[in-house]
Image (cartoon, rainbow, N blue to C red; front, side, top):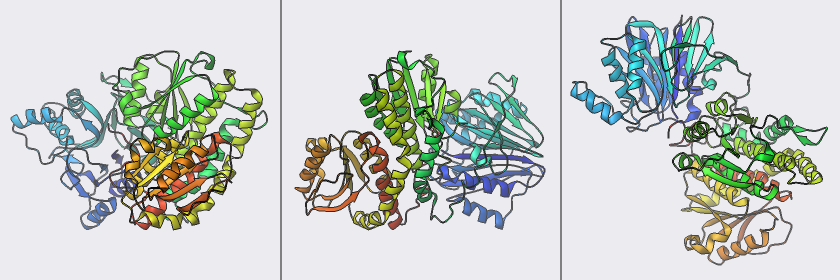
Length: 605
């Protein structure tokens, strides 16, 4: 969840580190810092708060040096303050770290018995002091290797040394780490996005790898210290990614990009001439699949929940969904005839990556549905289905959610066709409807003006409730999550039919209740549940595509969406909920692209 940058160059690196840290801000953080090496001295600068504050510090007292590391920290061990910010340095070594050292308390006690003193509350300082101790008798590479053997947990590390002015050492276990190449400069970074402004040539460390960077060379080593070669990837050029254009923030831009990103995704997978969906290289024959298991976290998990309804509707397969952080600790009964689908925007989500790794260790076939094809989850999967949404900068996912659902929906249809679970004419009719989706999403975005008025009703409420049935239930969960993420207001999503089993006790006069009611087989039951809420004073926002005249003076607002076939309604009904969360947060003057306490790429457990 933190961000690392390292640069070895033939010129001053501090401002390039600052610029790269700004690129990593989307990951979420609460403090920032850097360390450079100049005249055999480690020059450390850090602060709580934003990178802009760190930049102001540098303007007052510069940090010259041709070698340096930088970091944006999302607090785990220790409160967000200057002392706990990274880097953590002694006189001879400086370290930046992503991840969690699980045995840090035991190591700290051992180091304190040796007379070493700790300045911070962090687990990272344990690494710094272990290295300081090892450097008394070993050269940097061996000192790092011996230190890593003592650590339990996950980490990505960037390390510089006072007495070795030319090298940065990086190491990875669990948390992602990339290396970038350029003339007279080489780079270390948490992800390719931070390095993209400086280079498009990237390699990725695997678990257990160590790399040694100088300005002219990069060497890689495996866990046994054997020198290894790494594939170099050439990244695509996304010039418009970091430009908000005329939008106030990235999230609004990404919400309004969804018709375009959906069109791009459909273009990648749908054969317009043959009315077919092009998925190749299945890791397991669709006819042999016994069960589909979908695994994800947060918004990605909600896309899995929607997919469960689709797979059950269109195929004869058994379907399970699992939250990744639960899946990895359960005593799962693996079956080689099951297909395990792992959904992640970043492709670096720690719990999802660990769940994938568990499947790999048990010889199970895996598929990842990701937005970053160079990510760890993508590289470790047997089969990768990119969502083609383009980089998503806003922490609260929008276009990636639509992209995840779209790819899974098309995969579901393809599997249904290949297994003979769906008639060919029905399959081609659904493909025809998929092609209309971008234009329908465009029409849904036109409800924004009305949503802006509705948003004012949420400012003084102590909470809200989102209700839906069938595949609208996961959309209710997602709508509530978006409101929580962006506006910091309490919100809950429920199956509408569960109201009378407890949640109805929460309804009181004036409580905003969002009812998601597409004109599907659940429609009249959902309306009945809505009446139960109205009878108890709830203030209703009804979102529907039905043209039935539902008259009730206690429906405060009604949002009308284009009528669409039942299976596509989750896509359309997501849009007004995204806009609602966005405009409530805007009215509350929240930091929309970087909500408090949250991170874009959740790389710690």
